[in-house]
Image (cartoon, rainbow, N blue to C red):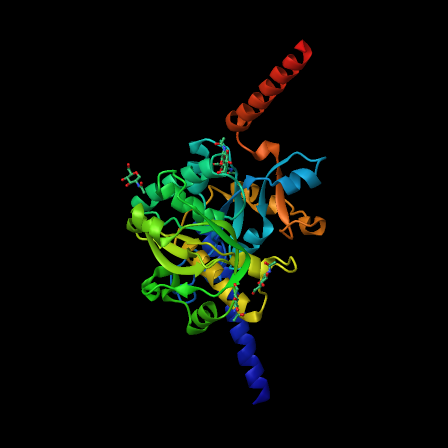
Length: 378
Ligand SMILES: *[C@@H]1O[C@H](CO)[C@@H](O)[C@H](O)[C@H]1NC(C)=O
Ligand SMILES: *[C@@H]1O[C@H](CO)[C@@H](O)[C@H](O)[C@H]1NC(C)=O
Ligand SMILES: *[C@@H]1O[C@H](CO)[C@@H](O)[C@H](O)[C@H]1NC(C)=O
Ligand SMILES: *[C@@H]1O[C@H](CO)[C@@H](O)[C@H](O)[C@H]1NC(C)=O
Ligand SMILES: *[C@@H]1O[C@H](CO)[C@@H](O)[C@H](O)[C@H]1NC(C)=O
């Protein structure tokens, strides 16, 4: 009895091992599928029931470094950055990140966007009128994403805080329709609009997530600008965006706090889910309760699920490896008092190609030369 069971088990194991060897051999003799030579659980239709792309890569737009970094890292030539919390936001929902450089030509953005599965435009404090900066890069990305979606490639964009403001600014044909707002270090529950449940962003949110978001002070607001429903009505922006929630700033002024594009998979939030999850500056009203974490993680999961609907990919593994953010190390800027615990800080070489950055440097050099000339004349 006992021994016959052992024999059966051994026979099954032997059969399995022969089968798996055959499987590998068949795949090898098939030749073409070099990467998927062996069975990958993701390829099993019984596991990947939604036929998702399971290796999503999100491009995160860099932006001009802050004065804080210029002041504290004087021996470095940092010119652009990404707050690491945005990288973790993507990684924490099953994605990988490539940085998207600012200051480049349209062709660069077309190329990189043909290889990634979504774009995240982070918050920050840069101006939209800075030439060859965050807004110019955002403009290319926005136009390319619209073209891609029109041609049938699902290309999602997520805008947080300044990134959301940039999306609306671009819809408004580069006019700055932002109001002043006083909502720094303000934790708030969302005040949902009537039809929020019919939105893509919130339709699948669990009752728990909606309860937390609408009840507790869990969204982290850090903004001095905002958009209002009045502005949207006046400038016809409702044609492009569905407003999903509003909030009130420290003085009671109403502002839009979340929205989604009516036609394209573009989403914007005025608050910072990534700060709740990954930023730990004290006394700034960033809620780190387990409920705040559940609610904030919802937005990361939602966006990465959008990215999984896109099937763009790099030409080969080498190209992918060279593009990923793993090639760079974040700096512990929080130790020096930055609002960001960690930042990816990039050298001048990454800010633009020869054209954008060099133009800026030539201009600065020219101004310096002129100034020196003027001084010598005195
Ligand atoms: C850019 O915008 C900021 C704030 O809106 C303003 O203070 C600054 O003068 C502008 N710069 C240029 C070059 O227009
Ligand atoms: C932006 O420009 C387009 C094309 O000229 C126009 O159709 C649209 O109404 C403008 N949008 C706004 C908000 O001004
Ligand atoms: C949430 O924060 C606001 C200030 O923004 C405060 O007035 C309110 O009492 C807070 N609500 C709760 C439930 O703590
Ligand atoms: C944090 O929020 C409370 C109200 O909930 C407010 O009294 C306090 O001033 C806020 N902290 C900061 C640094 O603004
Ligand atoms: C990978 O793709 C890049 C871009 O298309 C190409 O230049 C490179 O030769 C490729 N490398 C390999 C090993 O196939």
